[in-house]
Image 1 (cartoon, rainbow, N blue to C red):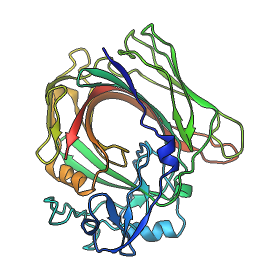
Image 2: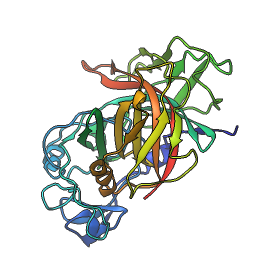
Image 3: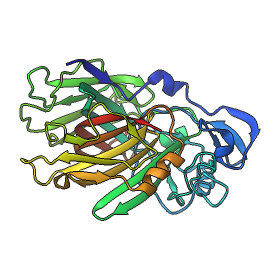
Image 4: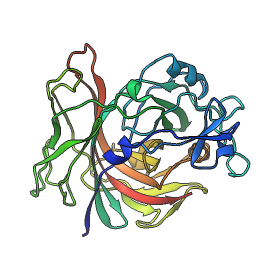
Length: 366
């Protein structure tokens, strides 16, 4: 089986990120074309490419409301590390509505919740079946969201026992991150390797050059461990150890969409799979995301149901958010824990997600 590693980090792209303004005036995003956004000042600005990101917090408000919060100097966010941003960005002049414009064929879907500015970290290892090819996500992200001008907006959707969250991150400054000597992920029992080492790859970004073999969670490991090694310098990450239970060692047994097929985002998206008989209480995560994971829609459901349909309102909201780069869809099992990682010289640390996943991934056509 072809072995590939997908690193959801790009230090060069991250360092080169920023907003380049054009003179074109605008009232909403649709006036600027799919690749740009309309700022609060009524000027088209380029959407930056930022490495992966994810944050949970959010309060009441609209996209325009957050402009004042960021300009007042409030905080930052660093979840999975997605997009960040121009807090003055307006999703539309008509009251904070996500609006793809009449030319996009996507209706208004209501206001996003307010934005947050608070750093959050992520260390994630996962394996995904992409058209019969095994790929691996190995990433560490610790961005200083206040210093990077990152604002995270989110909106919740519910349908029965199923819940979905749309997250969009917007950035207005250059990336600033928290440093560390490195991160080590261990506890593997598949015989090919015991640890995976991540080294600094940009501001607050960590990546590995190791080639991982398929089946990284086979061998019945007791736990997947995470170790952050500190430089000891002021403002750097402090030493920290965490562990999570290994995820189900096999990807969901997918019925539809077919492995290797392309998902069409403009039509209803339904997933069907055979539940894992040995783990009756498993939860599945379905995530629709753009290339930098600046915009992503994450849904959860019970594995035992064997099916999940993304609510049309949530799917339309994702499309209205103008996803950039390639878009993909994941169905995954995962184990995750959130712990506070200390920062040298500071009283409070950074809430950090330590995550291990096993799943399937499809390309998505808009």
